[in-house]
Length: 110
Length: 112
Image (cartoon, rainbow over all chains, first blue to last red; front, top):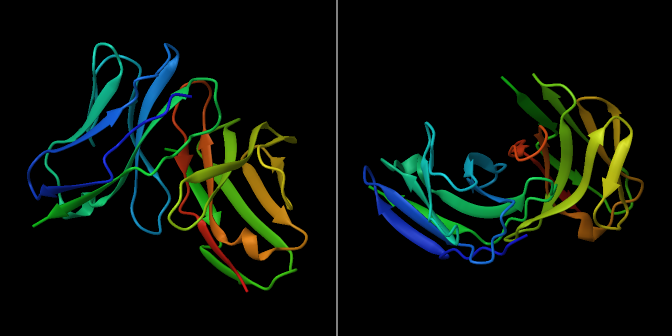
């Protein structure tokens, strides 16, 4: 599976949009991009995933560049409860292993 | 909707004692099931996965084992725990193909 690169930490003001970047320059054609988050002492929570088209659900939007070498997770109106570690994972559809890296620690500040 | 349950939430065990962690899924049939371990400050390590009853694949050789006695039940076991078995154990389920894995709340295991 392709390796991902994320900034180690980011801050965001409460009520503003949080834009979390992820680089995956070696992504293959059959690999999807998944985003999870983990709040301390809890299991990872699935947020959103996509292959090449932009995706939106009730939690977030996922923007994937046309060459698929990078993506951005957007939390439109960040709240204090969105403070967590966010993980970008690239995985082929038939691979059972979700390889979580170090992620980005997002801190939402009042 | 689908839900996943893990218990216990925390566990403190002496070295050399046995282990049994249980995970059950509700609201779906024939899920893929997974056991992961997360060491403090580190990423998740896939330990076992199962695509059906009695079918277990091991990713990492160690003194842990897994079993799937029923379609929606996944058990992680050990006969004799080591200090290095301490960690945060997570169970997850998914349907087939590209669908995401959904995680339980985990069991924090401390070995003394």
